[in-house]
Image 1 (cartoon, helix red, strand yellow):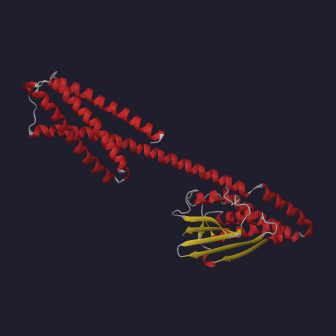
Image 2 (image 1 turned 30 degrees about the vertical axis):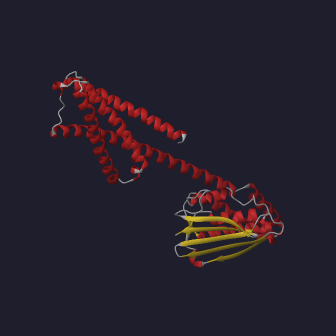
Image 3 (image 1 turned 180 degrees about the horizontal axis):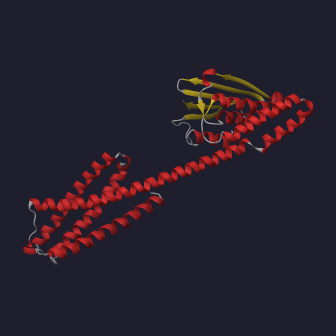
Length: 356
Protein backbone atom coordinates (compact mmCIF):
# COMPACT_ATOMS: atom_id res chain seq x y z
CA UNK A 1 0.00 0.00 0.00
CA UNK A 2 1.38 3.43 -0.97
CA UNK A 3 1.84 6.28 1.49
CA UNK A 4 -1.13 8.12 -0.01
CA UNK A 5 -3.39 5.07 0.22
CA UNK A 6 -2.29 4.43 3.81
CA UNK A 7 -3.05 8.04 4.74
CA UNK A 8 -6.51 7.82 3.15
CA UNK A 9 -7.26 4.54 4.94
CA UNK A 10 -6.14 5.96 8.27
CA UNK A 11 -8.25 9.04 7.73
CA UNK A 12 -11.30 6.91 7.00
CA UNK A 13 -10.92 4.89 10.19
CA UNK A 14 -10.67 8.03 12.30
CA UNK A 15 -13.69 9.63 10.64
CA UNK A 16 -15.71 6.42 10.77
CA UNK A 17 -14.91 5.90 14.45
CA UNK A 18 -15.98 9.45 15.21
CA UNK A 19 -19.29 8.96 13.36
CA UNK A 20 -20.25 5.83 15.26
CA UNK A 21 -19.09 7.22 18.60
CA UNK A 22 -21.47 10.12 18.03
CA UNK A 23 -24.17 7.63 17.10
CA UNK A 24 -23.47 5.69 20.32
CA UNK A 25 -23.81 8.84 22.37
CA UNK A 26 -27.10 9.79 20.71
CA UNK A 27 -28.43 6.23 21.17
CA UNK A 28 -27.61 6.28 24.87
CA UNK A 29 -29.22 9.66 25.41
CA UNK A 30 -32.40 8.62 23.60
CA UNK A 31 -32.46 5.22 25.28
CA UNK A 32 -32.14 6.70 28.77
CA UNK A 33 -34.70 9.39 27.97
CA UNK A 34 -37.43 7.02 26.77
CA UNK A 35 -36.51 3.64 28.37
CA UNK A 36 -34.86 4.57 31.63
CA UNK A 37 -31.36 3.97 32.93
CA UNK A 38 -30.95 0.26 32.28
CA UNK A 39 -27.67 -1.53 31.66
CA UNK A 40 -29.35 -3.51 28.88
CA UNK A 41 -29.82 -0.29 26.91
CA UNK A 42 -26.11 0.37 27.23
CA UNK A 43 -25.31 -3.11 25.91
CA UNK A 44 -27.75 -2.76 23.00
CA UNK A 45 -26.34 0.65 22.04
CA UNK A 46 -22.76 -0.62 22.26
CA UNK A 47 -23.47 -3.71 20.18
CA UNK A 48 -25.37 -1.86 17.46
CA UNK A 49 -22.72 0.89 17.24
CA UNK A 50 -19.88 -1.64 17.12
CA UNK A 51 -21.59 -3.76 14.45
CA UNK A 52 -22.33 -0.68 12.33
CA UNK A 53 -18.72 0.49 12.70
CA UNK A 54 -17.45 -2.86 11.41
CA UNK A 55 -20.26 -3.25 8.86
CA UNK A 56 -19.77 0.19 7.32
CA UNK A 57 -16.04 -0.49 6.97
CA UNK A 58 -16.87 -3.81 5.31
CA UNK A 59 -19.24 -2.10 2.84
CA UNK A 60 -16.55 0.45 1.97
CA UNK A 61 -13.90 -2.23 1.46
CA UNK A 62 -16.19 -4.38 -0.67
CA UNK A 63 -17.41 -1.43 -2.74
CA UNK A 64 -13.88 -0.22 -3.49
CA UNK A 65 -12.56 -3.71 -4.08
CA UNK A 66 -15.28 -4.51 -6.62
CA UNK A 67 -15.41 -1.08 -8.31
CA UNK A 68 -18.98 -0.28 -7.31
CA UNK A 69 -18.29 3.44 -7.70
CA UNK A 70 -17.42 2.92 -11.38
CA UNK A 71 -20.94 1.67 -12.15
CA UNK A 72 -24.00 3.67 -13.13
CA UNK A 73 -26.39 5.03 -10.51
CA UNK A 74 -28.79 2.08 -10.70
CA UNK A 75 -26.01 -0.51 -10.42
CA UNK A 76 -24.46 1.29 -7.46
CA UNK A 77 -27.79 1.85 -5.69
CA UNK A 78 -29.06 -1.74 -5.68
CA UNK A 79 -25.68 -3.05 -4.52
CA UNK A 80 -25.57 -0.60 -1.63
CA UNK A 81 -29.18 -1.38 -0.68
CA UNK A 82 -28.44 -5.09 -0.65
CA UNK A 83 -25.38 -4.48 1.52
CA UNK A 84 -27.46 -2.33 3.90
CA UNK A 85 -30.12 -5.06 4.21
CA UNK A 86 -27.50 -7.72 4.99
CA UNK A 87 -25.44 -5.64 7.42
CA UNK A 88 -28.53 -4.34 9.28
CA UNK A 89 -29.86 -7.89 9.65
CA UNK A 90 -26.47 -9.16 10.83
CA UNK A 91 -26.30 -6.31 13.34
CA UNK A 92 -29.61 -7.29 14.91
CA UNK A 93 -28.74 -10.99 14.96
CA UNK A 94 -25.40 -10.35 16.69
CA UNK A 95 -27.00 -7.93 19.14
CA UNK A 96 -29.67 -10.51 20.07
CA UNK A 97 -27.00 -13.22 20.35
CA UNK A 98 -25.22 -11.16 23.00
CA UNK A 99 -28.23 -9.56 24.71
CA UNK A 100 -30.36 -12.65 25.34
CA UNK A 101 -27.66 -14.69 27.18
CA UNK A 102 -26.66 -11.58 29.13
CA UNK A 103 -30.27 -11.15 30.27
CA UNK A 104 -30.61 -14.83 31.11
CA UNK A 105 -27.47 -14.76 33.26
CA UNK A 106 -28.42 -11.40 34.88
CA UNK A 107 -25.35 -9.66 33.51
CA UNK A 108 -27.51 -6.73 32.40
CA UNK A 109 -30.96 -5.50 33.38
CA UNK A 110 -34.05 -4.59 31.38
CA UNK A 111 -37.65 -4.17 32.57
CA UNK A 112 -38.88 -7.69 33.43
CA UNK A 113 -35.51 -9.06 32.28
CA UNK A 114 -37.10 -9.64 28.88
CA UNK A 115 -36.35 -8.26 25.42
CA UNK A 116 -39.18 -7.60 23.00
CA UNK A 117 -38.56 -9.73 19.95
CA UNK A 118 -42.05 -9.96 18.51
CA UNK A 119 -42.10 -9.77 14.68
CA UNK A 120 -43.21 -6.14 14.55
CA UNK A 121 -40.54 -5.12 17.06
CA UNK A 122 -37.83 -7.08 15.21
CA UNK A 123 -38.77 -5.38 11.95
CA UNK A 124 -38.64 -2.00 13.71
CA UNK A 125 -35.15 -2.69 15.07
CA UNK A 126 -33.94 -3.78 11.65
CA UNK A 127 -35.61 -0.86 9.86
CA UNK A 128 -34.09 1.75 12.17
CA UNK A 129 -30.65 0.20 11.76
CA UNK A 130 -31.05 0.08 7.97
CA UNK A 131 -32.08 3.75 7.86
CA UNK A 132 -29.00 4.83 9.83
CA UNK A 133 -26.70 2.72 7.66
CA UNK A 134 -28.36 4.01 4.48
CA UNK A 135 -27.64 7.58 5.57
CA UNK A 136 -24.01 6.61 6.17
CA UNK A 137 -23.79 5.03 2.69
CA UNK A 138 -25.31 8.12 1.07
CA UNK A 139 -22.86 10.43 2.85
CA UNK A 140 -19.88 8.21 2.04
CA UNK A 141 -20.72 7.80 -1.66
CA UNK A 142 -21.50 11.53 -1.92
CA UNK A 143 -18.12 12.42 -0.44
CA UNK A 144 -16.35 9.97 -2.75
CA UNK A 145 -18.17 11.45 -5.75
CA UNK A 146 -17.11 14.97 -4.78
CA UNK A 147 -13.48 13.87 -4.33
CA UNK A 148 -13.51 12.09 -7.70
CA UNK A 149 -15.01 15.15 -9.41
CA UNK A 150 -12.36 17.36 -7.82
CA UNK A 151 -9.53 15.00 -8.80
CA UNK A 152 -10.93 14.74 -12.33
CA UNK A 153 -11.06 18.52 -12.63
CA UNK A 154 -7.51 18.84 -11.31
CA UNK A 155 -6.30 16.15 -13.72
CA UNK A 156 -7.95 17.99 -16.61
CA UNK A 157 -6.35 21.26 -15.57
CA UNK A 158 -2.95 19.57 -15.30
CA UNK A 159 -3.41 18.00 -18.75
CA UNK A 160 -4.36 21.37 -20.25
CA UNK A 161 -1.38 23.03 -18.59
CA UNK A 162 0.93 20.28 -19.86
CA UNK A 163 -0.51 20.61 -23.34
CA UNK A 164 -0.03 24.39 -23.30
CA UNK A 165 3.56 23.89 -22.13
CA UNK A 166 4.23 21.35 -24.87
CA UNK A 167 2.72 23.66 -27.49
CA UNK A 168 4.93 26.49 -26.27
CA UNK A 169 8.01 24.27 -26.26
CA UNK A 170 7.14 22.88 -29.70
CA UNK A 171 6.76 26.42 -31.03
CA UNK A 172 10.14 27.38 -29.59
CA UNK A 173 11.68 24.25 -31.10
CA UNK A 174 10.30 25.14 -34.51
CA UNK A 175 11.58 28.71 -34.27
CA UNK A 176 14.97 27.61 -32.97
CA UNK A 177 17.84 30.03 -33.60
CA UNK A 178 19.78 27.57 -35.80
CA UNK A 179 16.99 27.33 -38.36
CA UNK A 180 16.32 31.08 -38.39
CA UNK A 181 20.03 32.05 -38.46
CA UNK A 182 20.79 29.58 -41.24
CA UNK A 183 17.86 30.87 -43.25
CA UNK A 184 18.89 34.51 -42.77
CA UNK A 185 22.52 33.79 -43.65
CA UNK A 186 21.46 31.95 -46.80
CA UNK A 187 19.11 34.78 -47.64
CA UNK A 188 21.90 37.35 -47.27
CA UNK A 189 24.07 35.36 -49.66
CA UNK A 190 21.26 35.00 -52.21
CA UNK A 191 20.39 38.70 -52.25
CA UNK A 192 23.52 39.46 -54.26
CA UNK A 193 23.91 36.14 -56.08
CA UNK A 194 20.32 35.39 -57.11
CA UNK A 195 17.71 38.05 -56.17
CA UNK A 196 14.86 36.01 -57.64
CA UNK A 197 15.66 33.01 -55.44
CA UNK A 198 16.08 35.38 -52.51
CA UNK A 199 12.54 36.68 -53.03
CA UNK A 200 11.22 33.12 -53.23
CA UNK A 201 13.07 32.21 -50.06
CA UNK A 202 11.55 35.17 -48.22
CA UNK A 203 8.10 33.96 -49.27
CA UNK A 204 8.77 30.39 -48.13
CA UNK A 205 10.34 31.50 -44.85
CA UNK A 206 7.46 33.87 -44.14
CA UNK A 207 4.90 31.13 -44.74
CA UNK A 208 6.80 28.71 -42.49
CA UNK A 209 7.02 31.19 -39.60
CA UNK A 210 3.40 32.28 -40.00
CA UNK A 211 2.22 28.67 -39.87
CA UNK A 212 4.28 28.07 -36.72
CA UNK A 213 2.63 31.03 -35.02
CA UNK A 214 -0.93 30.41 -36.20
CA UNK A 215 -1.36 26.63 -35.94
CA UNK A 216 -0.62 26.13 -32.25
CA UNK A 217 -4.20 26.19 -30.93
CA UNK A 218 -4.80 22.44 -31.13
CA UNK A 219 -7.31 22.52 -34.02
CA UNK A 220 -6.62 19.75 -36.51
CA UNK A 221 -5.78 20.68 -40.11
CA UNK A 222 -6.06 18.99 -43.48
CA UNK A 223 -3.17 17.20 -45.12
CA UNK A 224 -3.32 19.74 -47.96
CA UNK A 225 -2.76 22.63 -45.52
CA UNK A 226 0.05 20.81 -43.75
CA UNK A 227 1.69 19.78 -47.02
CA UNK A 228 1.80 23.37 -48.29
CA UNK A 229 3.72 24.40 -45.19
CA UNK A 230 6.05 21.39 -45.44
CA UNK A 231 6.84 22.40 -49.02
CA UNK A 232 7.73 25.92 -47.83
CA UNK A 233 9.90 24.45 -45.08
CA UNK A 234 11.67 22.06 -47.48
CA UNK A 235 12.26 24.91 -49.91
CA UNK A 236 14.08 26.87 -47.19
CA UNK A 237 16.09 23.85 -46.07
CA UNK A 238 16.94 22.92 -49.68
CA UNK A 239 18.86 26.17 -50.00
CA UNK A 240 20.83 25.39 -46.86
CA UNK A 241 21.59 21.71 -47.56
CA UNK A 242 21.64 21.97 -51.38
CA UNK A 243 22.43 18.54 -52.90
CA UNK A 244 22.70 16.91 -49.47
CA UNK A 245 18.90 16.97 -49.15
CA UNK A 246 17.09 14.77 -51.63
CA UNK A 247 13.33 14.46 -51.17
CA UNK A 248 11.09 11.74 -52.59
CA UNK A 249 7.33 12.00 -52.08
CA UNK A 250 4.40 9.63 -52.52
CA UNK A 251 1.22 11.47 -51.55
CA UNK A 252 -2.19 10.08 -52.41
CA UNK A 253 -4.48 12.89 -53.70
CA UNK A 254 -7.39 11.25 -51.87
CA UNK A 255 -5.56 11.84 -48.58
CA UNK A 256 -5.29 15.61 -49.01
CA UNK A 257 -8.69 16.20 -47.39
CA UNK A 258 -7.90 13.98 -44.38
CA UNK A 259 -7.19 15.66 -41.04
CA UNK A 260 -4.27 15.33 -38.68
CA UNK A 261 -2.84 17.24 -35.69
CA UNK A 262 -1.29 20.61 -36.57
CA UNK A 263 2.45 20.47 -37.25
CA UNK A 264 2.34 16.65 -37.33
CA UNK A 265 3.85 16.14 -40.80
CA UNK A 266 6.24 19.07 -40.47
CA UNK A 267 7.49 17.81 -37.10
CA UNK A 268 8.26 14.43 -38.65
CA UNK A 269 10.07 16.06 -41.57
CA UNK A 270 12.00 18.42 -39.28
CA UNK A 271 12.97 15.49 -37.07
CA UNK A 272 14.15 13.49 -40.09
CA UNK A 273 16.32 16.36 -41.35
CA UNK A 274 17.74 17.24 -37.93
CA UNK A 275 18.59 13.68 -36.87
CA UNK A 276 19.13 12.12 -40.30
CA UNK A 277 20.22 14.41 -43.11
CA UNK A 278 22.13 16.92 -40.97
CA UNK A 279 24.33 14.35 -39.22
CA UNK A 280 25.55 12.67 -42.43
CA UNK A 281 28.31 14.50 -44.35
CA UNK A 282 26.80 13.43 -47.64
CA UNK A 283 23.21 14.02 -46.57
CA UNK A 284 20.72 11.52 -47.86
CA UNK A 285 17.26 10.84 -49.18
CA UNK A 286 14.17 11.86 -47.26
CA UNK A 287 11.04 9.90 -48.18
CA UNK A 288 7.50 11.10 -47.41
CA UNK A 289 4.51 8.79 -47.97
CA UNK A 290 0.91 9.79 -47.20
CA UNK A 291 -2.03 7.48 -47.95
CA UNK A 292 -5.65 7.08 -46.90
CA UNK A 293 -6.50 3.49 -46.05
CA UNK A 294 -10.13 2.98 -45.09
CA UNK A 295 -10.78 5.09 -42.03
CA UNK A 296 -7.08 5.67 -41.32
CA UNK A 297 -4.62 8.27 -42.56
CA UNK A 298 -1.19 6.65 -42.81
CA UNK A 299 1.91 8.86 -42.85
CA UNK A 300 5.46 7.51 -43.17
CA UNK A 301 8.67 9.54 -43.12
CA UNK A 302 12.03 7.80 -43.34
CA UNK A 303 15.58 9.13 -43.45
CA UNK A 304 19.17 7.90 -43.04
CA UNK A 305 19.58 6.58 -39.50
CA UNK A 306 22.02 8.46 -37.25
CA UNK A 307 25.26 6.67 -36.43
CA UNK A 308 24.77 7.42 -32.74
CA UNK A 309 21.84 5.31 -31.43
CA UNK A 310 21.31 7.79 -28.61
CA UNK A 311 20.25 10.50 -31.05
CA UNK A 312 17.05 8.77 -32.09
CA UNK A 313 15.12 12.01 -32.11
CA UNK A 314 12.76 11.69 -29.15
CA UNK A 315 12.61 15.44 -28.62
CA UNK A 316 10.05 18.08 -27.78
CA UNK A 317 8.42 17.94 -31.19
CA UNK A 318 7.66 14.22 -31.05
CA UNK A 319 6.55 14.53 -27.42
CA UNK A 320 4.09 17.19 -28.52
CA UNK A 321 2.87 14.96 -31.36
CA UNK A 322 2.29 12.09 -28.93
CA UNK A 323 0.34 14.38 -26.64
CA UNK A 324 -1.87 15.45 -29.54
CA UNK A 325 -2.76 11.79 -30.08
CA UNK A 326 -3.32 11.12 -26.38
CA UNK A 327 -0.15 9.03 -26.07
CA UNK A 328 2.72 8.90 -23.62
CA UNK A 329 6.15 7.28 -23.73
CA UNK A 330 4.73 3.96 -22.51
CA UNK A 331 2.12 3.64 -25.28
CA UNK A 332 2.27 3.73 -29.06
CA UNK A 333 -1.49 3.57 -29.73
CA UNK A 334 -4.68 5.27 -28.58
CA UNK A 335 -8.20 5.76 -29.84
CA UNK A 336 -7.10 8.73 -31.93
CA UNK A 337 -4.11 7.16 -33.60
CA UNK A 338 -0.75 5.44 -33.35
CA UNK A 339 2.84 6.59 -33.61
CA UNK A 340 6.00 4.52 -33.93
CA UNK A 341 9.62 5.53 -34.48
CA UNK A 342 11.97 2.64 -35.23
CA UNK A 343 15.25 1.88 -36.91
CA UNK A 344 15.18 -0.37 -39.96
CA UNK A 345 18.73 -1.22 -40.97
CA UNK A 346 20.37 2.00 -42.17
CA UNK A 347 17.08 3.91 -42.20
CA UNK A 348 14.98 5.50 -39.47
CA UNK A 349 11.22 5.13 -40.00
CA UNK A 350 8.50 7.27 -38.40
CA UNK A 351 4.98 5.88 -38.83
CA UNK A 352 1.92 7.93 -37.93
CA UNK A 353 -1.65 6.64 -38.24
CA UNK A 354 -4.61 8.91 -37.50
CA UNK A 355 -8.21 7.78 -37.27
CA UNK A 356 -10.53 9.78 -39.54
